Length: 282
Image (cartoon, rainbow, N blue to C red; front, side, top):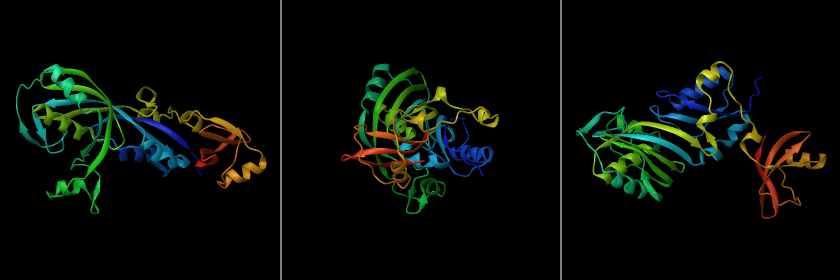
């Protein structure tokens, strides 16, 4: 029986869906218990954090981490999907925007806002995914989400193209951001490339390629790789309690603790109102 548990950071190649990556891992690692922590569009590349086995319990926690991207905008065209793979709706030539104007406009987006979800996305509305409405030319009211942009930096501005780095909250669509940016700049534009460079502390320089997976050269991260918590050594009585998720009163002040017994971490406990309660069980 396969008991592989851990986290693998994948550098997703272009034109693979996030589901494609999970399917490849299902087959290669011989396990069905795998979940990713934030969909990347097929066009997009970069960090896709994948949880395996018992670590799938961490999917929601990791999905909530902030994300950093490098995005490129092709100026002069507008598409139905808001990226270069879509059908061209409008087109202009030789568009260039003043550097200072681009910087000021990018910076104007920093902070909290509401963002309209793109119609070509997997978000459910009334039991159907939005892309199903789009493909069938059906009208639907696009939902809005609360998002936050933490940091943004212009990297390149040349005729016909803008590249920027951006750090955002969970649920932010860069395609939609680019659409809003171009509207504010008064130009046509669509996303031509997107690279996710970081999700929380998971960085692209520490990621694994699909070739690494195929050749068994990947790095499987364990709980100690993911969190920098102190360990609490359980006695036998405490071990029995923790194994069943029973809260503990300890003379400690750490916000989180690894619960360890016989050199094995069996849980993460979180301090709440003076009592340590189960946050994640292994």
